[in-house]
Figure 1: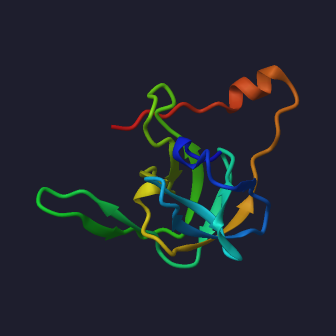
Figure 2: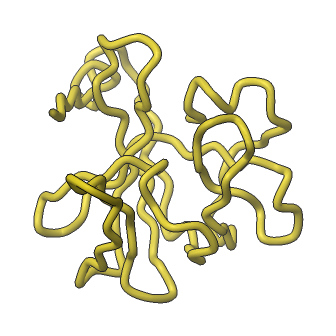
Length: 137
């Protein structure tokens, strides 16, 4: 999926083996771009597994200025969060320790590879079971 603020950006779905880079698209959000074309957003499905080239760095708002933090993780699962809240960022990454960071918080220029896409449900019951509603904040 691509966050609401990327709806007017050229995009394509992610594929296994894609090399992605975190990129600011000038629309108020960061997302994944194709390494070969930083103006092409790559939309990732919830449940997609990603591997980063380095430990993941992100920006966290502080009291007086923003802080950059680095996680001790290089793998994550793409999630959609706060789906019931309109006009907020929904694209996020869940890390092995359960921490969830919105994609727009990631520092720009980080490289990731798509390891695995989620299995596609074959029945309505499977589709419902795959839904994971996460509320953050």
